[in-house]
Length: 367
Image (cartoon, rainbow, N blue to C red; front, side, top):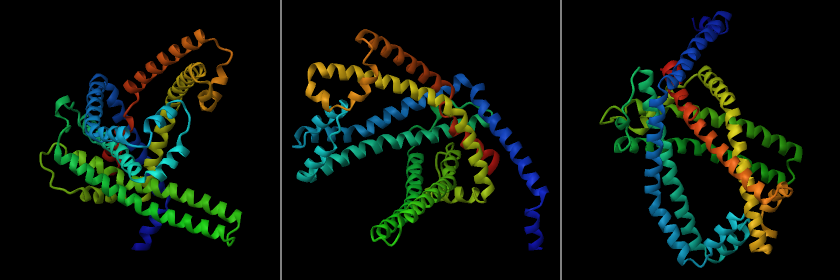
C-alpha cells in the first residue's frame, strides 16, 4: 500500500493536478491583490493612518534613548558632533572613532547602546505595522472594510504576542547563523594553516553561501506566517494562544516542499513586477543625492578648501564640473520634484502589496 502511494506521487496525473491546482490558487491570489485597487481610497487612507501611527509611536518610544544619546554626546570626551559633521560631509570618521573608542571604552559602549536601542524601538513598530496591514487585508478578502479606528493600534496583548513571535523567530534564525559562522571560521583556520587550497576555500565559501541563502529563505518561509496567524485573532480582546503556538502553527502549515516552491514563484513574480518601478525611484533618489552632494562640495570648497580635499564628495562633484551653479540648482530642484512625485505614486499604487500576497497565500494555499 505504501509502495503504491509512493508511485502515485511520480505519476503524470499527480504532476498535472499540482499545476492545475496552483493555477487556480494563483488566480485567486491575483484577484485578492486586485481587491486593493477596488478599495483604492479606503486602502490609501488606511495606509496613511497606519504609517502615521507607527512613525509617531516609534519616535515616541525611541525619543528617551535618543535623549540619552544626545546627553552623552554633550558630556562625552568623544567628539560625536564632529563625527556627525564629518559624516554629513562624506568624510569617513571610522579610524578616528576607533581611536577614541580605545581610550574611552565605557562611554563608547553606552553611546552605541543608546543608538542601537533608538533604532530597535523604531523598527519594532515598523514591523508591528505588518500585523495591522494583515488584519486590514483579511477584511478585504472577507468582503468587508475595516473601520480606520478599529485596527489594533494600541492592543497590549497583540503587541506582546508580536514581540514574543519576533523573539522566537530571531532565535530560530540565530542558531543556524551561529553554525554557519563556525563553519566559516573552520574554513578560515584550514586555509590559514595551508591545509585547504585557495581553490577549495573559494568553492567551499561559494557552496556555503548558496546553501545559506536557501536555508535562511526556507526558515523564513516556515516562520513568516506566524504573524498572519496572529493577525487572524486580532478581533478577539483576549488571545489564549502563546507566541510559540503561532510559530509551531506556521511551521505545521508550511510543511512540504511544493508549498515553498509555490511561494518562491509568487514572490519572484511580485519582485519582477515591482523591481522596474523601484529602480526608477532609486535612480531619482541617486540623482538628487549626487546633485545635493555637488552643491555641498562647492560650498565646502569656498568655506574650507582643506576639508573639501578630504571629502568623499569630490568624485561625485566631478561629474558636474561643466554645469554652472545656476543650472546645478535648477537640476536639483527638478530632480527633487520628480523624486517626490514618484514617491507619492509608489505609496499610493504599489506600497505594501507584499503583505497582501502573504495574507492571500495563506488563505488560498496554506489554509
